[in-house]
Length: 426
Image (cartoon, rainbow, N blue to C red; front, side):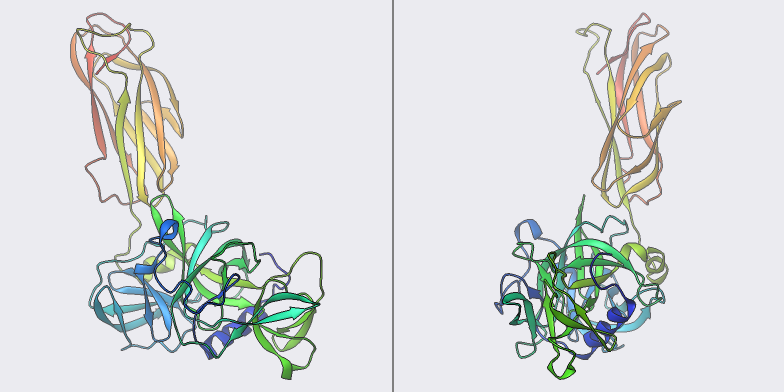
C-alpha cells in the first residue's frame, strides 16, 4: 500500500461513516456537474459492468450468477425480502451469506437472471485501470489550504442515490490484518489529468470495480472504504468536514478519534480508496455460490506450409505449427496438448513460444485469457510410405472447464512420399 496513512483504525472509522449516510455519486477531479456519467459508459469503457450491476436500496450490487448478487457486507440496510430491478425483471432477495474473511456478501434472489458478470480471479488487478460505480455524495465546495485548492468537500445537499461511474488506477494493496478487511486494492485521488478520475464517498459502498482482461471486463473489486475522510484546519472537531482531497497537506485528519497533522510536502498526500478484491476470495465465492464456474475456451489449430503430391516444393525446410488459443474468460493452467503422427513420421526439431515439447506432448504452465501460443515442429519421413496420412493434436488437460469442445482437437492431412525425406503437408 502507498500513502501517508496506513492504519486499520482509519479504514474502519470510514466504514462507519459509509454506513451512516448516502446520497448522489462519486467525486470527480474535473467537474461537479450533477449529470456527469449517469448513463452507461461508451467507447473504450463500454461493457465495463454497467449492465451487470443494479441499484438495491440506496446502494449497488453486481449479479455474478443466475441467482446471486455480490455487494459489501457492511451494508446492513439490505435485508431478505428486498426487491430490485434487473434485466427487465423484478427480483427478490431470498437469503444473504457473508464472508468471515472480507467485507463481501452474497445476496441470493429469485427469479433467476440470464446475464451476469464474470469475476476476476487473477491477482493482476493491482496496476490495472478500473471503472468504478457508486451512488454516494458528489463534489461540493473547494478545500483551500495555503492559497491552493487541495480537493473538495462532500456535497451533502445535492441529489439522492444517483448511480454514476468513473475511473481510477489501483496503485498498490493493503493488508490490515483483520478478518473484516482482507487484502484490499488501493487507488489514490491524485489528480492525474484523467477526465474520468474519481474518488469514493459516503454511499458508494457495495459498488463494483471492473478491469479489462483479454476476453472482456471482469468484476475485480467491491467498494469498501476511503481514508482519510474527515478533516479540520485545527484540532477543533466543531469545524470538521468530509472531503476528497488530492493533497491533505496542511490539514488535520481524523485517526479513530485522534487528530493527526499532515504537514505540507513537495509530494502530494492524496486520499485513498480501499476496495475488496475478488481475486483474494475465490475459494469463498466458489463455496458460497453453488454452480459458479471459471471456464477457459481452449482451442487448437494447424498452420503449415501447403504441398501436394503433384506440385510439392523441395523437401528441405518444410515445417508446420500447432496454434493454441484461449478465448477465455479465464486463464488456463496445467495445459497439455498431445500430438500424433502417421506411421513413418518422426519429429526432428521443435520450438515453442511457451512451454516445452517432449515425446509428442506440448506442456504449458499457463495460457492467459485472450492469449495464444505456437509450437513449430520440423519432421522427417523415416520410412517410405507413399500416400496420405494425418497429423492430429488434441487438448489433453487443463485446470479449467471448457464448455466449447468443438475446437479441442484438430487434424492436418500429410502427403507421405515414396522415399524417406522431409515431411510433405497440405
